Each structure stands twice: as structure tokens, then as C-alpha cells.
Image (cartoon, rainbow, N blue to C red; front, side, top):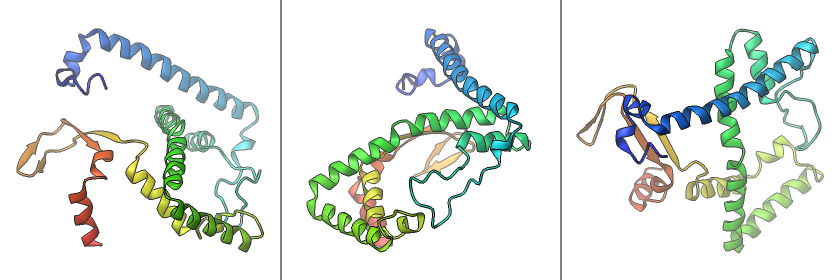
Length: 214
């Protein structure tokens, strides 16, 4: 965020001479060290057990009950198994772990919090969601299976609408891999562009145009 609002620091060479670069390097060393420690400990565990715990089934079946204790591989174990087959390097694993540690620690809780907030504000929608869930649970003998989850279309739409209004990741930055023409304006390769999903998803003009195309 510090660099984002100081365009002159977007240039790596200028940023290298700033005190913030040293601070960033120090922080990254701590973060990457933590991630690498987790990966190394898990790999040592699988080496000590001969890798026998890397063979659990990793895909949910349609009749699996949500919350059941059926053994499945965790995401990190799946990536370690892939690295054993030379499909992923340690660097690839670290990048993936960094990603889901960031995106998994509060994005789900934020989405659920805003969903509950909106359902509280719209009692009619809340009643319809409750009735849909109760009906599906009754049809499945009180069990919530993977198949049952696919029969909750209204709840799914409510979740998607919540994430449209209150996206957990509302700011996305990308570095251009090629030149891009945007409304007669040339954006040069290697420039960074910022996509504000929160703003984009609530602009009436854009939503009206998209709705008319459906």
C-alpha cells in the first residue's frame, strides 16, 4: 500500500534506495521464513513416515456428509505429493502457501459476516434462505451432503450477491505482460494496473449494461 500511493517508488531501482526497501526485505524474510519452516516440518514428517499418509483420497464424493472425519489430504500435503513427482518446486509451494495463508485467514469470515448482516437487513430473503435449507436438510434425513449443497441455488445467489457488494479482496494489482489499449489510451508493458473490484461492482451504469446483455 505504501508503494501504491507513491508512484515514484513503483520503480524498483528507486525503491531499492529507500529505507522502506530494507524494512520490506526484513518483513519478507520473517514471513518467508515462517512459511518455509511449516513446509520443511511437514516434509520431514512425511519422510519419517515413509510417505504413507500421502495416499489418502483427496476428492469429496457426492454422498459425503459435510463435517465427517473422512481422511483427505490437506492442501499442503497435496503440494508436497506433487513436489515428490517433480510437478512443483519448493519455491512454488511457498508461493501457494503464502497465498492461502493470506486469503484464508479472514476472507471467509468476512464473507460470512457480511452475508449475515445483509440477511438481517432483509428478513424476507432470510426467511427464503432458511426455508430452502430446511427443505434440503429434510430431504436428506438431516444430513448436509455435497449433493445437498448443489441444491441450494437461492443461498448460492445470496452469497454471490454479498461478495459483489462487499468483496473480501477489493483491490487487485497486476503487472502488464504486454501493451494494452484502453479507450484510446496506451498502457505500456511492465506498468502496474489496479482493479478496484468493490467500486466496479457497484457502478450502476456498468451493472445496467451487463444486465441488459444477460
